[in-house]
Image 1: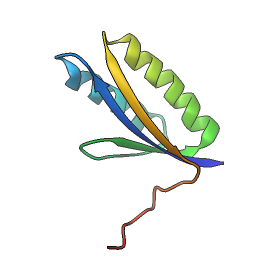
Image 2 (image 1 turned 120 degrees about the horizontal axis):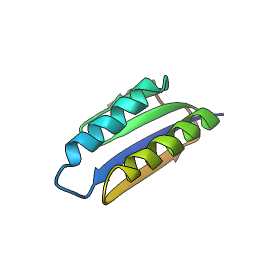
Image 3 (image 1 turned 90 degrees about the vertical axis):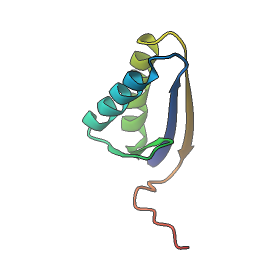
Image 4 (image 1 turned 135 degrees about the horizontal axis):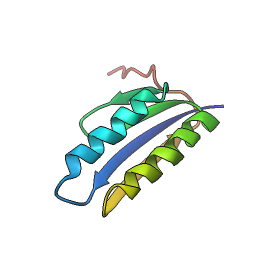
Length: 86
């Protein structure tokens, strides 16, 4: 089963930028399809693979910061080829 996950990672501290960059680079290195925009990061792939990567990388990201927020939305389908028609 394929899924699409939208993540918004917000370290709640002054040195937030490096934490976000590191998190996105680790997602890119995972081999999953990863797309970014200024407000969120989308990850696409097979459910177990995506969830295993996210479980590990979110844990690492949280351990490296003092306070933070991870907002996640999931869709049961691979929406990586979505293009708006308006």
